[in-house]
Image (cartoon, rainbow, N blue to C red; front, side, top):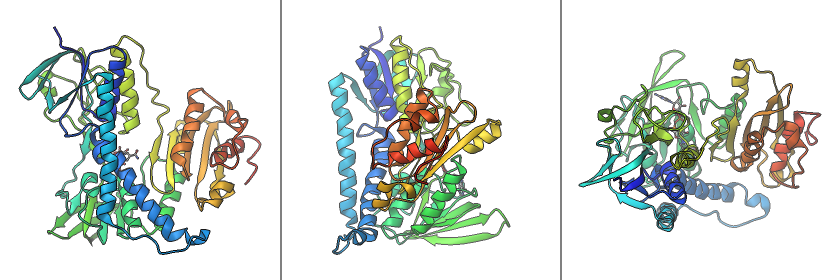
Length: 462
Ligand code: NAI
């Protein structure tokens, strides 16, 4: 007799959401988590703490750069780093405790410890052996390593160490101009650190719309961040207080050395499946270490499922959450589904960057006939009033049918604005549908409508 209907391994956004939904659907549910607190990487050392530091450092930036322009006089605040970290830790605490509360409310058992799967239908945690009709692996990801770069989480850090530095460094080198590198690089840049980002490719944020990439890098440069593009980091050498980073420029193979107080390694993440015993179980894995699953998120072992960062697809908390809800429904005999074509991606810098659907480059490559509607935030009254005119909304629609194919926004509130287009895409809407929808004035959302108008007879304010 199984003592649980479902055991979920991992309590990150994929795992905890899945556990709550399983319990809501009447399944006897447990979630195994080895950390001291629930919430996984996202809540403890990822999305949530980084957003707290982004918010605090943005407030400082506003005080230093925009308050006087609005007739707000007085001394700019100074940084109490310990106080800022305490605020961040408080935010983490509130969120992780919130999940503990939700587990209790929904009668999800938290099994504390690290899990392994000795056989199909069994989960070992310490000395205890549990059985479950269904096991869902949601064990997340960990930072990828880079040959020649040894992480000590003090001088050479991953995102985890970067959220808990002893002091604000004078000089920081960021390896990788991806989401983590630019978000955390922004935090320290605003706090007064001299930040240099070294990126292998010629553009920041690989895979994003090329116009957004260009504007994004230009705006970050304007804010004071330095970029070395087309450069492969070879090694780091760290002492107790400093580090040297050696990189080679791809264009001429020349070698260069740059020094820093802190080096942030942000060259991607990899699935975390250590200690689960998946190899012994014979679970199919991809060459990249991802668990292979079918359309129902089931592995080749019956009753064993996987979701989130351990499987294919973007490593995003909300993608994992959606999979968590969908797999819960499947296990409960319902028809859970995820539309992978409409998963937004957001970078929480200032301005924010948000994207959904296909990029112009992807459409070109696919030979898909499309049209572009673009609108600058300079033409948006609300953005102008808030010193937030940098950036644009770019909407892509099918040339014949007008159906929305993608949207790429860089500008104020982009991470919230994108959802209007996500909903529109879920309903198969056309650009005209958005253009004919009344949008309140004055809001940033009007820029989305203007981009939709630009797909038709033209925007009004450009
Ligand atoms: P990433 O994959 O976004 O970017 C890594 C960058 O490092 C790439 O641009 C790559 O070209 C560069 N790179 C690789 N090797 C290099 C080398 N030797 N020298 C110089 N550059 C090199 O990875 P990142 O930023 O570490 O993020 C990991 C994952 O976490 C991503 O999947 C991301 O989506 C997710 N994440 C999402 C957030 C969000 O949604 N706001 C926030 C933080 C992370």
